[in-house]
Amino acid sequence: MYNAASAKAEEFICHDEVMASLKYADDNKNNIQLIDSIIEKARLRKGLNHREASVLLACEIPEKIQEIYELAEQIKKDFYGNRIVMFAPLYLSNYCVNSCVYCPYHIKNKNITRKKLTQEEITKEVIALQDMGHKRLAIEAGEDPVNNPIEYILESIDTIYNIKHKNGAIRRVNVNIAATTVENYRRLKEAGIGTYILFQETYHKESYEKLHPMGPKHDYAYHTEAMDRAMEGGIDDVGLGVLFGLELYRYEYCALLMHAEHLEAVYGVGPHTISVPRIKHADDIDPGAFDNSISDEIFYKITALIRIAVPYTGMIISTRESEEVRERIIRLGVSQISGGSRTSVGGYTEEERPHDTEQFDVSDQRTLDEVVNWLMRNGYIPSFCTACYREGRTGDRFMALCKSGQIQNCCHPNALMTLKEYLMDYASEDTRRIGELLIQSELGNIPKENVRKICKENLENIQKGTRDFRF
Image (cartoon, rainbow, N blue to C red):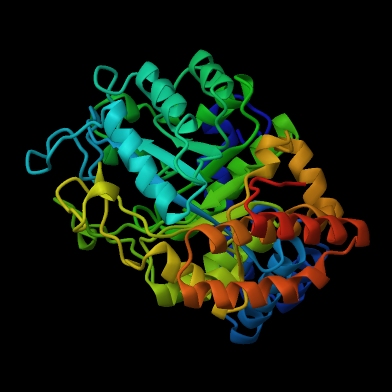
């Protein structure tokens, strides 16, 4: 029985409700009157439910798909402007006791080199990331209670926050680790994490259990209910995601929205972010072995429809995707991207990109400076801002700011000030030149005159050597 407010995974992600929604979508995919009414509802910027959004995903009418793309671009501009938040993943350990068939970290893979960073090695990795200009990290680790206990994760977070090198500082650590207990989520919150991220991989229970044949991750309910335990532990910024290609994409899309609706129904706030990874090649993993892979066009459509269905939620794309795909998908809704990423344990201190401990092949291999330069040439403001986390604007407080439109008076100046820091401390000459021109042109887009005035003063002080201003 479907119940968005239920505490049970199989009730808030109800298989029968997903299948009924997909049938409804198939029955109405050419119903122009209904499609138009759903698009008009989406124009109100209040979002769509899983069944309405599924109709649009099933629709194959070219002019309606174009309307969806144009609306997604406009909603992205309305809520997130032209800012793109920058981050990097930091892989701490690839020891893992699970047997996920799509991940090279699976316990039966004897080809991959197993590695766990010491605190000294973490320090070197973080300094390398700081020297690129990063301020926000997402730490990653395999599930292994012996090698990667929660104490190791907490110690690593503490190490990261305490590394100060030149003008570098990691101001926010997001965490992508396995589902855990309420008590452990409470400890992560106390450690000062930003967002807790956990990919569902697939919401299809039968497929999920086949894809995770052994290990603690085999427990579908425990994994799917992790965000509820995180919320109970005080973490009000959580990030969802599925690995597209494992199961039929329309099933995953519908269930992903149901998970967002569940969080909204129970906690009054939906996911802070939604990630959209696709399965990619990696050691011992052939994406061709999974028969549900999706084309670029379907990928763009999914992204656009996530943006209009959950308009206030941040969207993340990683370096799994190529420059060409990332350029298109940013326009359609993505608000956060990684840059200069290495998906191997200890990869940032290696001169040559190592492959022996990678979780997946990196398609976009440009440096952070090249990505920043590219974004600015395309009219975007690369933002290294972490102010909302540090000012307590998380969960429903962030959503209220976003929905009211006041985000422009916080995030826009914060983006400009953190970009100025990057230009002063890390950028190449060409990137600095482009960035200074961009900052001057974007100052006029700060709505409030007093905020604009303070921002200009702060930019001048950054030029003189002071750091870390925020609204």
